[in-house]
Image (tube, rainbow, N blue to C red; front, side):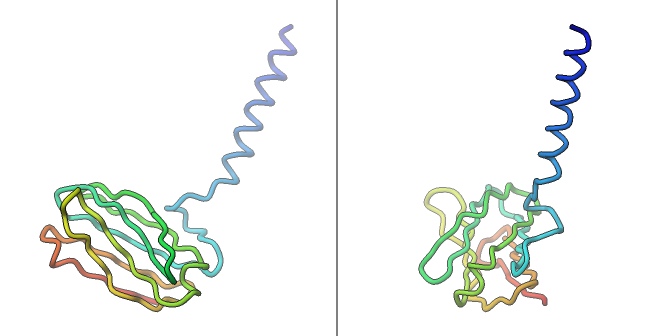
Length: 127
């Protein structure tokens, strides 16, 4: 009985370790080949939902809370279909913040700064 318990414990520990190595999070530096990175700094007083749009398709990247910096991986399929636009949507009734259309190449880093006054928000692209 004791031996069976140890075997079960080792099997569960091994499975957990195997699963952990396969995880690629949004903050992981090993982004997928051909992708771009979006850094969002939210200085606004409310959380914002961040989306990327390209060629008529829209993809939700996630939520960024006030005072938080977040990093997202933008899929290669989004950047190779033409210009992309990043949109930060604050609470209901608020006007969304748009980056404007950007032509990105694989490996580009986009910094999307959501200002405390939404109209002062900025976007920069670095290679």
